[in-house]
Length: 113
Image (cartoon, rainbow, N blue to C red; front, side, top):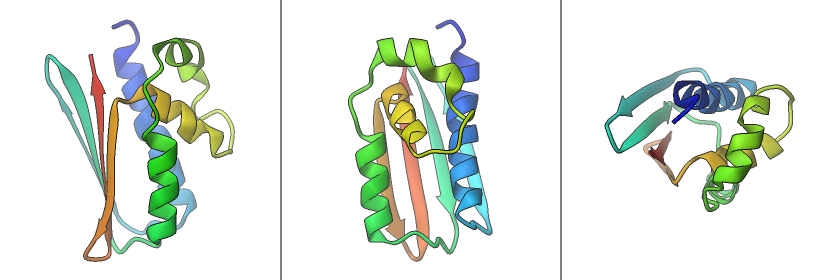
């Protein structure tokens, strides 16, 4: 559990950067920590993302968690401007639910301990 808080912050930072870079006007973040997991909830209101963008996000974030990749690369997240960082985020989380409802983009990321 070493660096757990920093890893969560890197995940949130990278997703904040992604949304703001893509002209998000209003976004909410909620982080809920328990003894067994951390959940990150993100709402992008009046999203500019379309269904194809959502599918791209799903494919980047819903890869199998890779502890060995996470251990070596988590510190690099947020250090450069390319989409491969989303793949590192995907390797750091266990599950991602991403959907558009009522013109809003909803992300729910789960990171188990």
